Amino acid sequence: MKQLAYALALTGMCAFGTVISSTPASALETYEAQMTASDAASQARIDMLDAFGPKVLKPGQYLWRDVPQDAGEERVVVSLSDQMAYLYRGNTLMAVATVSSGQPGRDTPTGVFSIGTKKVMHRSRKYENAPMPFAQFITDYGVALHAGYNPGHPASHGCVRLPSAFAKKLYSVTDVGTPVYIGV
Image (cartoon, rainbow, N blue to C red; front, side, top):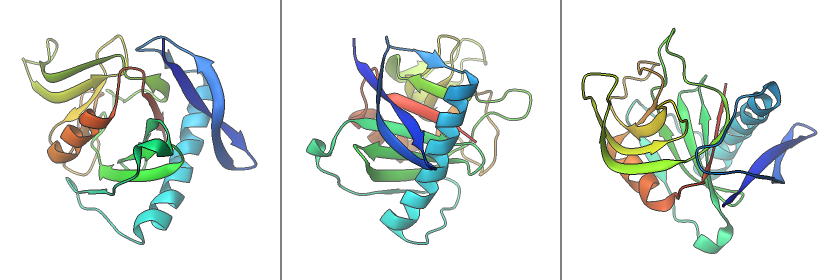
């Protein structure tokens, strides 16, 4: 069983050190988990500026930089309000990408999750066999991070769609149990 590192809000900053035992595909959608994920998303915006400068990404774009593997474990932070995903290795921001999350009425869940299952190519059983390349499932009810159409606004059925090249790279560096924080 992999241990998940969850964010602990300290004076407005996120300190990633509190460890909560979890099994793959765990999901914490409590108010506290949602606030922790939103704090992580707020910090990620600041970290992006520090790591990449004042860049504005267009839909389908991403930035990636090399961070040594010994920097720490990976974690993904998704900001629904910014429609952005952030990949950390340890406390270092490694990559950032635009996303398309769930459209109104099919909202992407918020909270703290972990990757439970990974499939290089998955086809949706719910939505007309829709392709979901590089799918990384974070809930037991089918929500995943995966490559898909990225129009720059929420347009999915609840999943987090990623630019294809980013999804492929992300898939290669995450494992079952990698924490995923989804906040507003």
